[in-house]
Length: 163
Image (cartoon, rainbow, N blue to C red):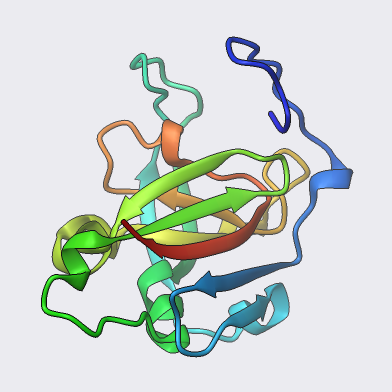
């Protein structure tokens, strides 16, 4: 999807997009890079019966068990900078994959709703490492009604910004 003109929806998959780490950048006190190996040692969350449903409502995959680490735990470790009372209302997070695909989350979604309990950096599907069609690291919002539009294959960076 990287550098494609509007309206073009050719999807790209392959080894050249594989990610082996995710960087947490932007408005954080300690920018961090988490390697795949390091993430494997972290406390895990699981989602059983997870199905990718695209924005149109089309089911894209059969129910799967996925396992990974919560994005908000990684953001907590990097230390999202919140100095003013209104900063949470103005803070957002952009997750990006090596293929250029992006998804947006508000600070409140991640830290102040149950959505945040399902936004995870996925490391395994059905007990196995992710394959070439998703990359070593993939981000999903498992509690979205239609999680497809915010699934980031080949996850490479998470940037915290403020409007």
